[in-house]
Image 1 (tube, one colour):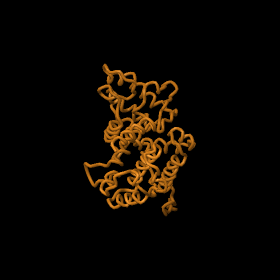
Image 2 (cartoon, one colour; image 1 turned 90 degrees about the vertical axis):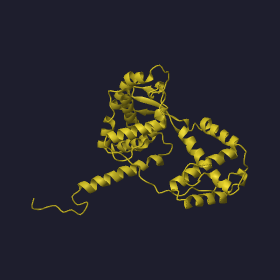
Image 3 (cartoon, one colour; image 1 turned 60 degrees about the horizontal axis):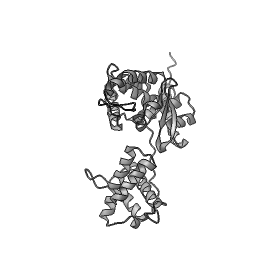
Image 4 (tube, helix red, strand yellow; image 1 turned 120 degrees about the vertical axis):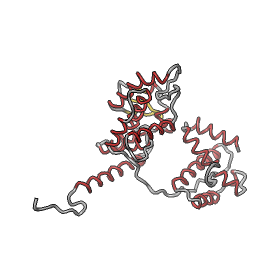
Length: 313
């Protein structure tokens, strides 16, 4: 089994160009987490039921596993993510002729409650972007990261993978390699370009020291930043900005898309900038815009919430 897992990991990395986060998530869904909580990994489930071969897995096995996860209190989104990982794994097994039939062909994922993504207000964004201390190398780096995440809608995996050759300050463009090894051009405005220029000319040179790397964003040892460190940077700067809500990298991506649509951008343009394969994925942000519009309307219109005007004034 370990040999198959190792080959599958190589397939995810080389064949699908999956990010380290995706690989880790998929493997954890299959193998499980033995450190805390109940054993929810699919292989753990199979072992407990004495199912010792992948050929023995059928549709009923998958239904039993989903029921088991629901009994343990797993959220629908968690179950869907695990099923997605199992679906990918068994598709690989079938394609490699390790199994004759794929048992997940007719197994559907649980229907998810569609939640609107969290976005920051214009004031919160302004405070967040101004939070880093731009007099220090790390502060210059952090400001450039925040500016780019908001200005370009980049995924955290895309921003940590940026190399110098992908950046064109003069044209305000970034050549990004996203999910599925798809390349796209994203744009940045003057504030992001200015912050990036300062960082590349000053902060990065000091952080680099004697190291040699093409990575745009590096740590204090001159090594490429990892996604977890970017999350920590955002956490720290959000606290410094007085933002009480949890802010993760995707919140800035959500905010970028929503503010673009609020500003009148075409949905397909936003789709292209975000690197979404399907327009339906981008359309969630139109619902956010409508939700925000409703809040503004209810707060501003004198009759919206049953208020009456004072005729004496």
